[in-house]
Amino acid sequence: MLFNNFYNSDFFYYLRLFFVFVREILFGFWWLIIFLILGKIFFDLRKRYLEKQRRKKEEIKEWVTLAVKINREILQTPKAMEQVFAGLHSLKDSSVSLEIFGQKKEVYFIARLPKRYKKIFESQIYAQYPELEIKEIEDYLAIFPPNLPNKFFDLWGGEIIFENQGCFPVQTYQFFEAAREEKRIDPLANLIEGISHLQEKEWLALQIIIKPLDSKKWVESGKKEIDKMLGKKEPAKITWQDWTSAFFKNLAFSIFTPPVWPEEKKEEKSASSSVFSSGSKEIIEKIEQKISKLGFEATIRYLYIASPEVYDEINSLSVAAYFNQFNIKNLNSFRINENSLPEVKSKLFNKKRTFLKKIDFYQNFLSRQPGKETIILNTEELATIYHFPALKVKAPALIRILSKKGEPPTDLPI
Image 1 (cartoon, rainbow, N blue to C red):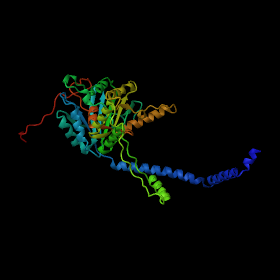
Image 2 (image 1 turned 120 degrees about the vertical axis):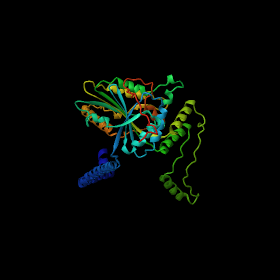
Image 3 (image 1 turned 135 degrees about the horizontal axis):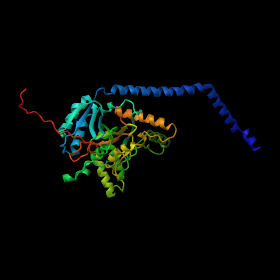
Image 4 (image 1 turned 30 degrees about the horizontal axis):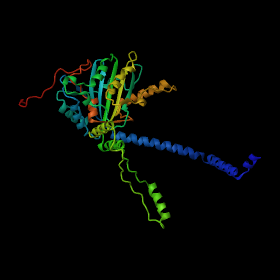
């Protein structure tokens, strides 16, 4: 009886009427829904096409690959390399790929950059390292097929990112140096030693793609983090909703009270901003030191290639071990981006999807494409992870040239 009353009620009548209306709309205009879906797909594809055309126009056609031959008498510290990066910060409209390539008992320092910047790069290097020799070569990746993996080669790789925000620094070369020469440590020895243990058909490459960063943006992010630690609250911004609300409120009460419009509140200093721990003070000082130097947007990735009979992806962990020595728990740390690894955890088409991810990763490495998740490094941090090894690095993979070039006498007859 109760159900019949509900069924015959006005509410149920209008509910049925509503569903009938929806059904008629779906049956009468189903084609419109398909049209909207196809339209969305069309505009997405068009957007991708235009973006691809824009990149094609901006793409640099001529690139050059330079190999830096290491002299046995390098006495400069990474401070010299920091000056090189400060000079390279002037290349605003392009990226530079700094790479370390290792094979059996051989390691090479490579730079790939637009050809028009070749002289600038060489002048910055020679200014700090006059004893080095720079030679133009073919791309070292040309020794491999254009598409990997295949039945002859397998690969593994990943990207290195930060654990924390970009304004937090990692350990730099100053930590590894001491006043006495015999106590100086070169962190690069760790990576070169790992390369020394590669077998004949194994290759390992480290790629650091850098692009000068507008200092204003990342300096502001660092200052915001400092203000947050000091307890300073950012003044709330006035939105159009605030103005709309104020308008109707003033309209309703204009007879009784004068109109009041939204105003930005002045920054209030927190009572706890003057009192913080010594650890927080050290973190603030480190952040201030990092943002005081020139910054680069960087993509760091590594690639391990080997023939199937000697393939062992564990050998690529020497790169992760290299970056671990720069980690500071209370500031920032390097870590492998799990999303960049070729491994697919899902069991659905696992082998096929892993194979496709490896192909995609290799193509990005080959074309020096910036990663989806980049990090921010200043000149000091860059010089720490990429510099030319000092004289004390004695790893067998490090081949040093026994001679060096000299300038001809000024009075040489022509």
